[in-house]
Image (tube, rainbow, N blue to C red; front, top):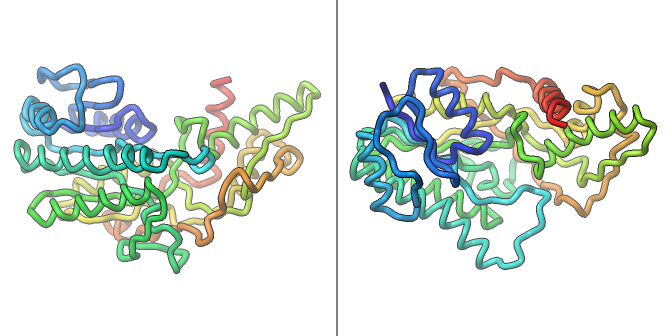
Length: 319
């Protein structure tokens, strides 16, 4: 049985990717903060793994007998509406440790004990900062403006370095992608849960208000399981490269509100209050041109409206 490693398996993307890999017949070894999990692998594995320890990583990959695929989804970041880290030095330290140092250790371990392993690094559209043009492709200059984006850009460059040395190492520049498993700290999930709360409050005769910022902010949103399908398509392609993973469709936060409240048959404007200070509006929209990825046969399968509806239905069942 072929073996795939998913580092960051407990997150939204790790969950869907691990399931898709199992469905494709791979034995999957998942690595996350809680430890190591294995499906279909009989290798003797440690209970946990320190990604900052090069020797542990080499021993881990060696114990697997050289895995066929490795996906690096681990990341240290903040959502758009979380408070900014006051200790800038500490923020950079944590971002660089997980998004760069641990990834470089992983690439080095692959070179040493699993040179035929194909790897994938999950980067972010934030590496483009505030680009001059509203649509970005793989040739758009990197202009990161946050600790997270700077570290992700460095992770991309590290991937390119090891690729130039002969590794099958690819980068996915991921635009915003949501699902039923999105954490509640993200604005998409807050809106989905808010629509459910508004419906229940209206039925009970209670007032409800959902406070959001920058309703006019434009975002390229896609469905997470579609994006993890893209990851698999990238590593299965014979030639490694960088790929934009995006829907290419712009939507505002207000559009997301409208779709979520439509799902519960309410007018979002009666329940949503804009508080611009809560979220900084992106001056130039980040909209991805995924033509290179689409040439591999990939395309989104779930529309924006259907994605939001699925999130609302999941929120209804969860509360």
